[in-house]
Image (cartoon, rainbow, N blue to C red):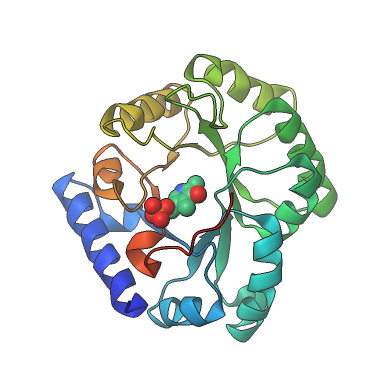
Length: 228
Ligand SMILES: *Cc1c(COP(=O)(O)O)cnc(C)c1O
């Protein structure tokens, strides 16, 4: 797998999808999801100019990224880390310290904990609320009908600034309606950012307004199997 050309190909597809939707390609941020991959796989992607990376586990990111960041200009070198996986409250402190964005704010107790950590650490990660658009029992995220109330509570009760919404459509559904619903909830709540679209469906997500696409396999290749 040539990861350098993988990231270039994904960038090309992002640009094509954006233009096809009458959007500026620069309005779509590529989050390269590097979970399970080590520095040897990540280095060529950094060499190809990619600076924004996604991880789904705090512990893994904490072990893997500080040396990589140090090697590429340190805190001012432009590398940004995004947490795309679900976050346990007991890891919120580490997550706020390490990540520049958290895509998975999915419950009130986490919102409350994050608000405290953000105040304590004086950090301002970009935050997305995760919406469980398919109302899947095994998936985290706020149910669509609870989204407006959740966002109001984040703002008014916890003083937490949420900038956008994230969704992961059910595996067997056409993703378009899930992206459309997420965009609609964001719009009526005045949120500008939409984290939606993965390797299989990011061009569709861009057509529905995605501002952040989270792409792993199409850049890095198949992930080694691991128990989740
Ligand atoms: C792993 C993961 C991705 C990337 O998925 P691919 O299908 O490999 O592109 C995106 N979002 C989340 C939340 C993930 O856990």
